[in-house]
Length: 309
Ligand SMILES: Cc1ncc(COP(=O)(O)O)c(C=O)c1O
Figure 1 (cartoon, rainbow, N blue to C red):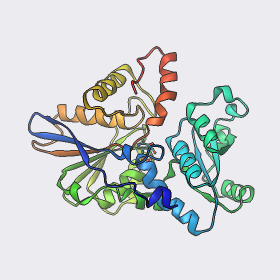
Figure 2 (figure 1 turned 120 degrees about the vertical axis):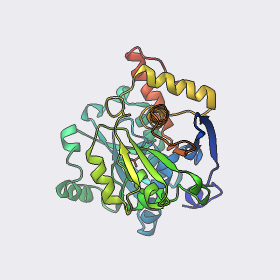
Figure 3 (figure 1 turned 90 degrees about the horizontal axis):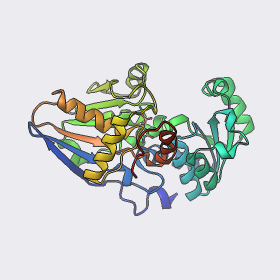
Figure 4 (figure 1 turned 60 degrees about the vertical axis):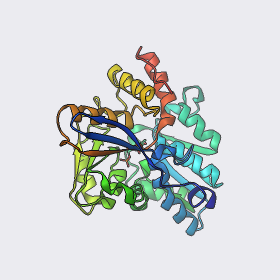
């Protein structure tokens, strides 16, 4: 466990100043993407206490869930390889069974790390949180530590509470992308009462507000649902051009599913006058860059610009 979670890796990286907008509004980025080359961003935070718990329970096998492009699948596979754990990925999409030529770069990467897959139809996959499904899983995969889809559970939230450091108390707004809400919950729990935590939803999903409120202790947060570009993993040329322009100017690559939409959303809100003058904004770069190659394949098919990485 040492060589991933309590080694020389610094988990308190400095924030990078991005720019000052009119009205003295400052944008900074917390480079969580630089935490580790393969287990980066919120994945490092979410896996930390889960994999420590697996080790305490003497479990040398882990199992988790995800789609074909999932950052969580890639990071779990990388962590499992480093820690020499047996790994199973329950993957959405039965059409991928035995069709390796159709696999995403994410699945090929996870396989190369040593992850074995079980492919499920979308219908069966939807059942994965039911008691009956869990029972079957426990029988089929005994002595295995099960991590939920997206990695979000109480231990993941505990890990995400470590993203903010003492130096971050000076920020007025903490902004992060939201998938399941676990990362945002950790940020909310460790924020100061005078700070506002803004979640930028990557999905068209108002129910997330309710989910997040079950995971947090305070009310200094808001879920914004206007920057998902039509839904999960949906993109357009304006977003890709913004991301490419941003990475050229600031030497920071964003991903198209989460952090690209987050930073685009922050720029939009500045234009709309959402942030008061002299606000200091901290955006969390939660990683996820492994998904760019798979996205570029899809962009090519749709004749959209490529993401430069
Ligand atoms: C890069 C990246 N950022 C943000 C998120 C959203 O995190 P959460 O699911 O905790 O809301 C994810 C998804 O897990 C992600 O992969």
